[in-house]
Every structure is written in C-alpha cells, then in structure tokens.
Image (cartoon, rainbow, N blue to C red; front, side, top):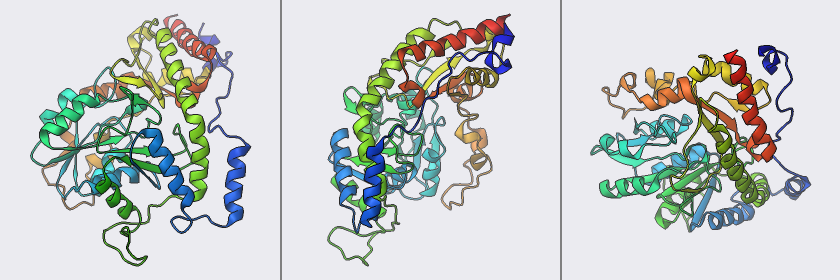
Length: 405
C-alpha cells in the first residue's frame, strides 16, 4: 500500500492546480489606465484611494477606513493612535504571525502572551483576565484563519478593565461574528492585503474604525504627521509615509467585487469538509458554532493525532498530504515566544523591563498545536469544488491506510 502514496511515486489523489490570485483583463486594464495617466501617487492624486477606503468602510459597516502599506503597519497605526505609552502591556496570542507581537515591541510596549482555545486556536477569553495588570493598555485578538474570536466575552472584559481592543482581522476579510464583519467590533480592526490574503494587491493594509478621533490620528500618523486643514510642510505628530498607491487600490477595488462570492464558497466548502474529516479517526476539524456567521477560511485547520497514523510525525504527514495534491502545510513550527527575537530579547526597545523573561513563558495549547496537532490547508484550495473537498478527505484516508499497513 505504501508504494501507492504519491510521495513514493504513486498516483496523486488530486491532480489539479488551485490558482491564486484570481484575476482577468479587468484588473490588467485598470492598472494600465493608471500607468498611462501618470497619476500614480497618493495623496497628490489619491481620489481613487479615498473612493476605495469609503467602499471598504461600507462593506465592513464602519464609518471610516484607512489604507496603508501593509497589515503590520495597520496594527502599528492603531496601537499608537489609542495612546500607548512606553512600558504599557498589550495582550496577544502566541499562535499568529510574528508582527502581531513585534509591532507591540516597536511601540516600546510589552507583549503579554495568553494561550489559545484548544477548539478554535483563537485567544482564549477565559485566560485573559489573569494576565491583566495595571499596565495593560490593549488586547489584540486575532481572528485566526478567518474564525471569529469570542468577541462578546473579549469586549466585556475590555470594558470592565477599561482596555482598548484592536482586532487583527488580517485573515478575516468578509468573515462575520453574529452578523457583524470582523474588524468592526473593537476600537479598530486591521487587515492585510499581502499576496496570500483572501483580498490582495500583493501588499497593502487597512484599518477600520467608528471612532473619528482615532481615525484622524491614524490618518496623521500614516501621512508623516500632517493633520486636516494643515499645510503640506506642517507636521504635528510623529508619523511616517505609510501611504498606499493608486495602482494597488484599483486592484483591490476589482478584487473586492469577487470577495463576497469567494467568501461564501470558502465558508461552504469548509463546512462540508468538516463533515468529511470528522469521520476520520485521528482527524478533528477546529470547532464551529462560536458566534461566527461567516468563516473566511483563509486557512482550513484540522487537528492531527499521530497515534491514529502509526505515530507518523506531523511534519511527515503534511509532506505526504501535499504530495497527494492537497495544498497544505504543517503550520507554525513554534509559538511566538520561542522565536529567537523573544528568547534572546533582541528588542532594541528601551521600555522593556529587565525582568521580562520570555524563556519562562509556557502556553501548552499553543505548543501542542505547533509541535503535534495543527495542519493547514491554504485558502486558494478552499475555492475548489465539492468534489475537491471529497478528494482532500480521500487523500488523508489513503495515507492512514498506508501507515497502518
């Protein structure tokens, strides 16, 4: 049976390419029109940028939206704008991309890692209050993989302790929590338009908010400290040039027209794939029914139990599954606090106290996800057909039968 595995030269279970990004001549022509116009910049020729910001705000149901160069900067702008001071603490999950925590360090604040929920891999709201001190300024819940966090609990905790909430919705384009778009629930919500994201222009970012004061400050920080009504060479705040270009927003405007249908397809495929994988001994999809009304499935994640696959290590299982034609990955190899950045304290930040010691941090659920359990299927594969989802399940069954031989 093992010789039938694709990794050993056997036939693939699924022999298909899942393209990304998806585009047509509309994107090509609109970008060409901008190039021919010679008006590439922002804000000198930023009318198209503002039009897209207004469109995205309407899509998310917020008053304001502000583009910037990437999702990391979006988080940075929001964090500075809420008024953090050196030495403030910001609660973050350890199972996310590095910049959710590194932007905290860049603002001379202290990342405080709180473990994730084993059923969703999102920040565990039941563990947040134990991490709150008199220096806690903000919580950054990450809607990981497009699965909504338990925002009711998180917002209640934040209100109780007078803490600001910045949603990291970089995986959550078009996803919803109890009918509200992700990113629109906290004080601000941040998105990435990097090349792998469900809405992309190669690079780019966005912050949404309903708070006019917060919006004005972020707008100033994005535009080298300029303010509304001020002069071009008049700078009030310590900002930088974090502006996006018209070339990017015309791509995004066209991609946004596809997003609702694509999100529904990912959501439906993810729901169907759950029903298939939950029947396989040793495979457990992450939980649903936690308040999400639409799951964007930027990543489809399932939990892998190697004891049901003859103790095959997760890394080897992921390699076998990829060889079968399933666009998959073993996920993060370690929690954020295990990264050399934190273990060696290569911070270059003067406000981090000497007693801050990330070598002593332990988040058992995150460590189990990284080292043993989590396997990812990438978002472009979730745009496939119902038959593709069935083949993903068949590939796992094929591997299981081979390992049990």
